[in-house]
Image (cartoon, rainbow, N blue to C red; front, side):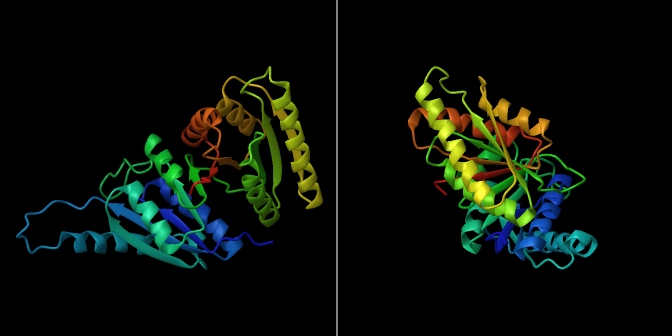
Length: 283
């Protein structure tokens, strides 16, 4: 089974975490035969209007040379189809624009680090990372920490009884089939424990997902957790089962649920030490 991924976009600032994200993307590309576009965003310096010196060309040549060095030295990239884009502008805006332009199927990015060239430490930090996630036109994997082994063995699938849950279930199934993953269904009842109807609906949702996974021959296990803070429940459980990936939806339809889930999604993206695959249903 091949994931429907043809084009991956990887923002890179030459920090260790961004290079790790590139290796992570290479592992996916080799399985899916996807093409990787490396994107570096830089701040264009201001020059006098009458200046004939084109510093942007000089900067871009230097960046491309650095990228070519990485391509030549990183064995994980051998056999991977790589393209390069170097642009000037605001990071989150450029990522979104390039993703749309190349029709990226997924963005894979590190979420902190300082640049090896111009100390662009603002790349994908905290709320800026979530801004990219929240406006992404395609699913996006954020990686906060460097792990020696890049695995996709155990996937955490937090669910609620919203209609949006099924959109990530389908992606999780494709992922599990491609990498032989086990899906951990994590049903969360942190909203209003006294509303028995909601809990019953959630149990029905779990049963429906279990049937779907069983029908498709995907290994799974289910867990229902009550907690005051949804993100804390998800991250604690991910640590407990030594998860390799967490799949979340970053928007909700109901206004009250949106306020709660939106905050939980932000916390998961910015706090998780496990890679997070976010699906923006408005993207």
